[in-house]
Length: 112
Length: 112
Image 1 (cartoon, rainbow over the protein chains, first blue to last red):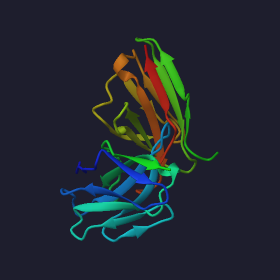
Image 2 (tube, one colour; image 1 turned 90 degrees about the vertical axis):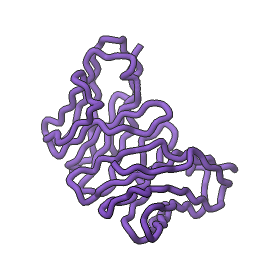
Image 3 (tube, rainbow over the protein chains, first blue to last red; image 1 turned 120 degrees about the vertical axis):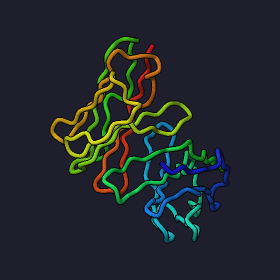
């Protein structure tokens, strides 16, 4: 499975934007970039995914580098409820499986 | 609540005992996944069902572990002769196609 590299932790202030980076230099042409987050004592929650183009949804934006070797999850205005572990995962959404290989993720702390 | 439901939420058992966990996926989701998560780590894939067929098993799933999804709806995960190293959060997820997975809140197993 292609690996991703994320910072162990990041800190942000409430109502400020947050940019969570992810490096995936060994990404293959068919790998999608998925982001999930896990709040304390909860199961992981889907955030967003993309292949080549930048993506936006109600939760976040995903900016993908032109060479696809890195991406950034953008939370436009962090709230205290966004404090969680954020996982960047590569997956082949064109395959018959949707097995997710989680790393350790980035622990995001949001300060009031 | 129409989300993924897992029972029990917590289980404490003595080493050597058998335990069984249940997962009720979102109805009409044909794909079901089991993951295991230990403290400070991301979830690790255990096994995957499409309808009632178990299509993939991780090498993490030793002979003491068995999972079933008899009618393509709910699933059970059984651990026989539990060991202290089995202590973890067991997460179930469901989905359709190759899009996002929806996770339950997990069953926390403690083997004493």
